[in-house]
Image (tube, rainbow, N blue to C red; front, top):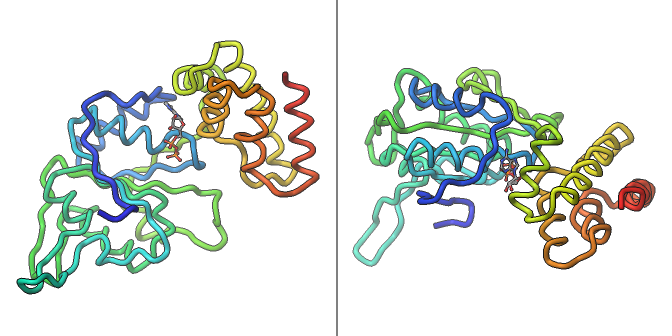
Amino acid sequence: MAETERETGQADEPFYLPVAREVEVFERCHAEQLAVMLKGPTGCGKTRFVEHMAWRLGRPLMTVACHDDLSASDLIGRYLIHHEGTVWHDGPLSRAVRAGAICYLDEVVEARQDTVVVLHSLTDHRRSLPIDKTGEILHAPPGFMLVISYNPGYQRMLKDLKPSTRQRFVALEFDFPAPELEARIVIREGGVSHADAVALVALAQRLRALGDRGLTEVPSTRLLVAAARLARAGIALPEACMAALVRPLSDDPALLGAMRDLVDASF
Ligand code: ADP
């Protein structure tokens, strides 16, 4: 299986702390056979949410990390040459349709437009996937669901979803959780004390405010969890914050200096 694809069927509940009514809305979308778009910045819990929902709904999850080389054949499948001749190999989308799985296309705007178009017939009343090369038409069973994620801030000028694609999805909006929820996530995922988690979240809030001063990428919940894990592993909190929260975000000396000042003022 290519590195960009992942098939999971989790026995244990993936930890996900709901921030609004997203669990209920997603469940209704699954029941109503509606495709869903998760909008929001990177590292704010979209992937974890889908993992949790797949577990909750008892469906296998097929995850595809989209990139600008991703072709329709990468999703649908292709003939491969074997010693006994050419053999058809389903791509992750075809496998997901056959299995009634949840198919999660992460960062879908990265994929080429002609690739995204193959999703269309799965997102309307047809709920089918024609495989032109074999002449087969796959009909999605009720359990199948298509989920895409999309970061509206990222490369908005360069890439966007076509309106004809957007209008096929119910959109759920994600953002960084409120401070008290984010602290609970940091405690649970990062294994730090309540006081350290609160301090980390407060620092993240101040760093995120630098978004107005030219910081294009602000620290995500994922980076906060990484800083907490470093601290739990014995790295002093200020050093953990520099390594996990500050340096990944910018190479600009002025911004790095401003962020270092905020770290120093926090601990
Ligand atoms: P995204 O897919 O939006 O880039 P992820 O789902 O990978 O982000 O989230 C990054 C990390 O942040 C997760 O691995 C998890 O540790 C944590 N996280 C963020 N939001 C939540 C949440 N609501 N509940 C539990 N964990 C969360």
